[in-house]
Length: 369
Ligand code: FNR
Image (cartoon, rainbow, N blue to C red):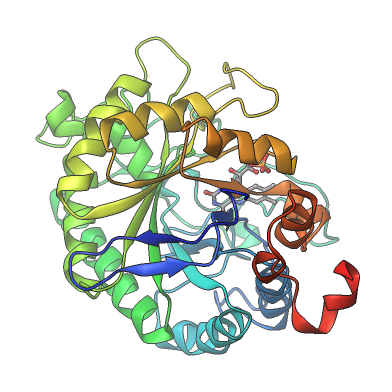
C-alpha cells in the first residue's frame, strides 16, 4: 500500500474541502510562453498542464500567474489580472478536471524581481539575463524598499497607498481564479518575490509599519492572506509557498517560517509548500530532498495542515519515504515532471499501488498492462 497514492483531503473553512486522488503535486513552473505580452495562457499551457494532469498528478499547479502586469517576472509570464486571462484559463482547468486532477493556480507578484528577461533560450531573449531595458519594453518595478540585492534595476519603494492597492490586486486575482474554476489558490511567498521581499530583512529596509520587527515585516503577507481568503470561496482551500530559509544569517530563517506558518493557518491557509532562498547569492544546501527538513519544521508548527516538500525529489521510493517517515504529507515535483509528464503514473506502478490507484490516463492503460 503506497502512502503517496492514498487520497487526501485539503481542508477549507467551510464544507468538506477538496479530495486529491493522490499526494503528488505538480510544482508551479514558469513557462515564459505567453504571446503578445498579454499574460493570456494558450495552447502551450493547455498541452503542458494537461499532459501532467493526464500523467496522474493529484494537484496540478499553474506557473506563477501575475496578479498585475507590473508584477510579472518577464513579459512572457501568464497572468490573472484581467478577465481575458481568466476566460483563457477556464478550458485549461476543465481539461485538468477531466483527467481526474485538481487544478491550482499560483498567484504571484515579482516585486523587485519583475521586468527581467525570460529564462528561455529563445531567439528574442538570446540568453540575456537581468533587467529588461526600456528599449525592450521594460517597466518600473515596485518593492518594499529600493535595493540592489538582486543585481537588477532598483525598484521604487512602495507607498502605503500602493501597498493597499496591491493587496486589492491579490484579492481580485483570487476572485478571477474562482471564475476560471480553479480548486486551489497558492500565494507565492517564496523565491525572493514581492511577499518574500517584505518578509526578509535582506530586502526590507522599511521604517514604517511594514518593516523592522517580525510583526511588521509579516504584515503585508498577513494582509494579502486575509484579502485573498475573503475573496476566495470559503469551500475552497487556500495554499501558500514559502522560502523556508534564506540560508543567510540575519535573513528570514526557518524559525520565522514556522512561527509565521502558524499565523497563516489561523488566517485560513491549510496547505503549505516549502521551498527556500531567492534573495542574493545561493548559500544553502543541495542534494536529494534538501528542503524536506523545512517542510518537517512547518508540519510540526501546523500539524493539521497539508504540508508538501519540494526540491530534488526525483525518485518514487524517495517520495514515498518522505511520507512514510512523517516528514511531510505530500511532494511537489518540478523538473522530474518536465522530463516525464507521467511521473505519478509511473511512480504508482513502481510502488505497487493497487491498480485503481495507478493514475494512467485511460488512453495509456497499456503502458501499465
Ligand atoms: C521553477 N520554480 C518555480 N517556483 C515557483 O514557485 N513558481 C514558478 O513559477 C516557478 N517556475 C519554475 C520554472 C522552472 C522551469 C523550474 C525548473 C522551476 C521552482 C519549482 O517549482 C521547484 O520548486 C524547483 O524546481 C525545485 O523542485 P525540483 O525541480 O527539484 O523538483
